[in-house]
Length: 314
Image (cartoon, rainbow, N blue to C red; front, top):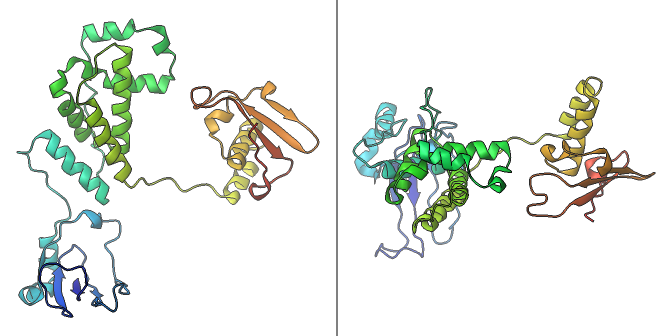
C-alpha cells in the first residue's frame, strides 16, 4: 500500500512547505491501494482503499514504514509483503507476565481476535484457611446472586497471595485465560468485593489497578450482539406462542419496553394491572431493584408496537 503525505500546517520537524513524501506501508494484504496526497489546501483526502484485509486482525498488524524509493522493489512481491507483516504476534517469552498481558491487551484493543485455549487449567484453588473464612463470612455477603458468588469463588485464590504479588497473579490468570479487558475489569471488581466479605485490608495499589482496568475496558471495542428486529420477534411469537404462551409474552414485553428479560421473568400477578387502554407493569425485583433504584411502573398501550409504546415511570 502506498501512502503520499503532502504538506500540512502542523508539521514542526522543519519539512519544506508544499512538498509531498511517499511512503510504503507493509501490511499483510495481498493487494495494495493508493491514498491521494494531502496538501494544505486539501487536508481531508478522499480515501477509498481497493481492498482491506477483512476479519484478519488487520488493525493489530505490525507495519514497517520506509521511503518509497528504497522499497519499490519489495512492493511488487506479495511474499515480501507478507513476510514483513506476519499474520500473528509472537509474545516474547522473556517478558514478565505483566508485560505479556499488557501486550495482549493492547492487541485486543487494536482489534486482534485471540482464540480461547482448547484446554484451560482450573482456577487456582484457595487455601483451606481462606475457604474456611469464605464459608463463615457474614450472612449478608451470602445474599448475592448465585452467578456473582460463583465469580467470587473463582477469584478467591488472590486472598492467599501477598499484596505485592497480587497484581502479577491477576494479570497471569487473565493472560492464560485470554480474558478480554471488560471481563478482567469485572473480575477485579469482584475481587474488591471479596476483600470486604473476608475483611481483608485493601492494598495501596488497589485504586491504581482499578483505574487501569477501567481504562482498558473503556478502550476495548466491545462487539455487541445484533439486536432483534420486530420481524424477528413476530417470528418468535408465531413459533412459540402456542407451546410457551407465558414466556412468549414475557419476551415480547421485554422487547417492546426495553427491559431485561431476567427482570420480566420475576414479575408476579400482583405486579400487573390492566385497564381498558393500558397494561401497567410494576418492576419490584431485578438487577437494579432495590440496590440502585426504587420500584418503577411501565405503562403499555394495548395492541401497541414499539413506535406507539408509551412508557411512564411512576
